[in-house]
Image (tube, rainbow, N blue to C red; front, side, top):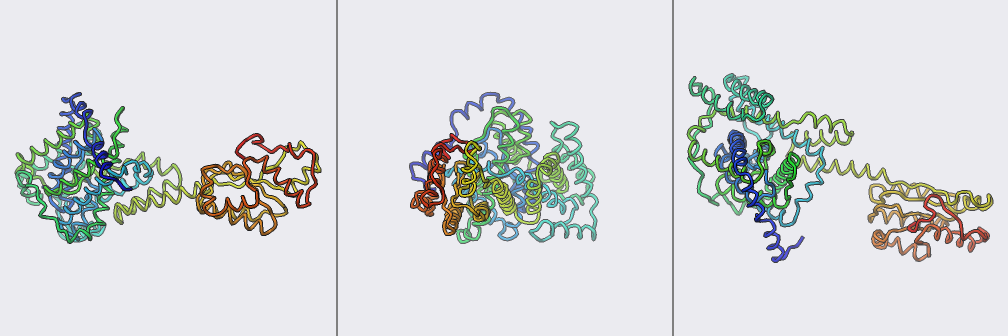
Length: 577
């Protein structure tokens, strides 16, 4: 889609915050401030953990949560969305870090941000609604498995093995643990995960993640447990914005990873915003504005050393449940994290990595909605197949490839189901109101078929085989008023069928061709073929009269006094065939 400078300016103006957004900030600031504080407490260990998991360090996770969280809150399309580093994005970033290093990740984030802004200008947000639910469920299940497996090295207290495939890294970590077990790290990880999971059931509104992390840190420091390796030194503040990481010569090789990151950011952010809408009454996000806000967030975050960000479903859900009503809550969350970065970096640096691993293990477990998975698996075989394939592809391949694979399989299965709806049924020409002799002549020489449903590439060839088997008739009437759609393949198949029947001496007449379908028929010559023979009619009664005239001229059927009032079955009086 080509956009002029004037249209780009108009689109940008529509994507920027307006007076309505400012008015909503003033509606209930106290409730939003409290919600923002709660989200910040939940987000702190997640930001640290995802930063470590990405390979760029805890400071990168904090920088992302602060910068991207603030910009996405201001410019995004949802009043309730909370953005920052996420487990899904971490899964994509690990192989990029292994191949291109930290500077490559920052460059990819910047490029992905530009792509997201472009998608917003092109109004691509509406296409999110076409992602099937089984793909989303399978994608989420796969991400949960990958996030959990990524935490195995830190949970076991072993150095992270080399490799960019999570299954390989996990296996190597288990081998390292068997050679030199670190039960202290295992105990910390399991204890933190257990506290979070049990606590969430007991008191859902209490932020057990931060309480468990604080307790683990205190125990590690008081007991002097060297086996509980801490995060390490963190800078007391955010770095100055810089483009020093940008290598123009590497942009070409990073284009594909950037597209993958942009696709994932768009998918996860719009999915998270949709989840937030479903949890509230009266809230509805603007998909294009959300893409725009996430684009700006991802352009800015790398300048401060942050990793690519997306809307975070877990943090957004906490935000909604704690009563947030406007963007002020997400802004408050980012501001509190900024204060922690500047004032409490030395304390944060002492958190054991195993404790963060426990937080992410519990997060992975809570991402899996068992009820939704069961419902999806029981719905249809197709839904179950799509879910399983997407989950396995997410685990074994790349997240974006997994979504593409899921969409392709879903599309093929949907086309198959739609193609099965296409039918070619023989219909009677009268109700027995005429003489037995005339009825016999009609049955012998004229046959009518009604085409129901779509006539497109997935169903057209089956239609041709059925129609080509017509025998022992002189005239075939095709009633097309119930054809819902027709593509070039369907039009070509129809033309081919008419030509084959004509070569066998069978005349083909049509009735009820819709105006919207005439162009595609005309483009392949099917309409001209019928017009040349004078065999296209507006209604079925006219087609029947044309068939009788044809047979009379051919000397097959004598004129009949009642031929002008010959009724047809079902839609005798319909005007479109």
